Length: 149
Image (cartoon, rainbow, N blue to C red; front, top):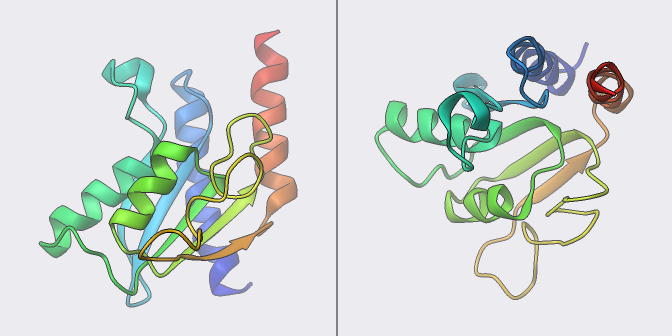
C-alpha cells in the first residue's frame, strides 16, 4: 500500500464516522512531515455550522497543533473533491498538495465545477492528485445516499 492510499484509508475511516452520525460521509486528514497533524469529518448538522466540512476541520486542527495558519509543505487527503469554500481555505493555508478520491460533480471546487486550488489568477497554486481509492470513496457516498432514498 502506498502512503497516499494509507492516508486516504484514514480519511475513509473518518468519512464512515460522519455517515454513522447521519452526516454526508466525507473525511479528511492533513499530513505534514509524513504525520497526520489534523483530521476531520463532515459535521454541519451536528455543529449547526455550514462551514463544518471535513477539510475545514482538518485544517483548523493542524493549524492549532502546528501554531501557524500557514501550512506550507502540508498535504490534505480528502475522500471527496472539496467545494469552493474548502478549496479557498486550502489555498489560504498554502497547502502543498491536495489528494482526493471522488469527484463532486455537483459542487466540486477543484476540478468538476471550478478550478480554484490551482488557478493561475491566485498567488498560490496547490498540486492536485485525484482518484486515490476513488472507487471506495464513490461507493461510500453512493451507499449513503441510496439508504436515504
